[in-house]
Image 1 (cartoon, one colour):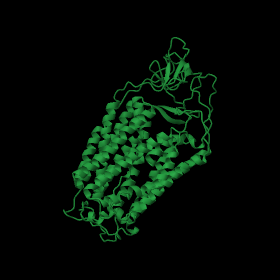
Image 2 (cartoon, one colour):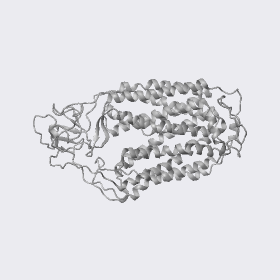
Image 3 (cartoon, rainbow, N blue to C red):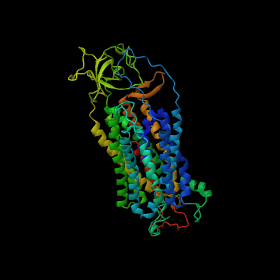
Image 4 (cartoon, rainbow, N blue to C red):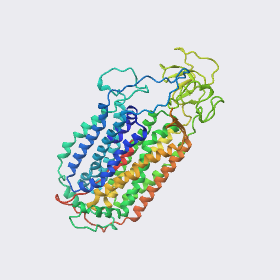
Length: 608
């Protein structure tokens, strides 16, 4: 809820309030993963021989502390000063804005946000690598996948709760605690919401779990009997060289344990398949709203809502279905891997929906259309708006009565507006062909342009969302089975370390580079950049829709083929042990290491 929900939805507000560039807020987001990567191997190796519920109490403490630290800049940065309203129409008397390189003391709060995320990463590590050790140890083998599936789906619904809660809190003014009345509304560009309240609520909630976690015993009653009934399904080419009961008790055994796991080919194949899948799911979680917004001409909020309604229920349903099917049919390790392979192939076939979804760009003045035959393509300034002193860094699209979209009312040459109408309407626009002058009156319903993008002629959206929903369900249906396969194919004593390795590689090869690769790919399809008064390139305003769709198909299909290849290779290489091999259950003084994990395919919930 905190890391993939509240943090993501508050990023744009924090950018504006603390004057941070997107590249720096990207560093805030990835700080969680950095902490996780650095700690996962050590925590999983050391924690497996400790008191796991107490490790979870420690995790709750760190998550609460991280959320508290993340909210602190609000209380030390003073009251928000929102300045005067920006005039969006064409004013010939307006002074041309000069280039000023500002350096703000607010920049230093960046380090507080990074510290908060590092603490959250420290708390997340035991939760994800040791957290479900209890569950997997405390339930029979065939029920394990059902519990893991439920855990997985919770880690996807968490971000959904974070998004809904964060969205509601952003409708409250940022300084609501100061109790002062303000004269700006939520649709004003200067409005900033109360991003910090959710983090304070999460701090209290996380710390309220510390005592309950601490009260659990090291093993639940009945665990020994359940363990006695389990049979081993360890992949046979990888037998531990150190079979004595003390192996894993000392930190000196860490390199040998690591080497053993890395030589388990089935384990490594399964880990690499999850990395490939994580890369594409986190990429889509981050950029699916942008894709829908640009392809189908929707507003940012509508696109984000649609993306969330497809991604989150689809991912949660897939996780639970995968767990239920494996549990119901009591599949062996090899059959679980075959099931994961089948769902991956189905998801690969459904990925081609992006070819069907591509839509031509709507006509845009200065980009794909000229200004009534004047000006040149690629240049927003034309004779009809040359005297307006427009800012290219202020993107406020309007749709002309002629069906052509304009960058802003200023670039359309509009001199009058009526803001009481919704959407806001504009009159006397020198760049939009019109026969007579219009004088706006309250009863007049004719206008030359209205705020917002022109409605898209593309009608493929319902079909696209339906097929993409199915692709998400099948993608996540493999998540639980692959985690269960990893638990089954490695030695009993090394299961939490195996999941520590999986979590680390999943981030290094999947969730960290995923959004970066998608971002670079989507930026390569840009046709109009934001260039400010200093000539510095900012965000992209307009993309080439067809090129974007084909580029996303290329990345998705490549990753899915890698996933299918490694899943197939794992099935081919797996050799089960002789029938009836028992799983030894370590007594209270020895090491208990079975862990199951929701690692961070939950990351994919994010960002929808």
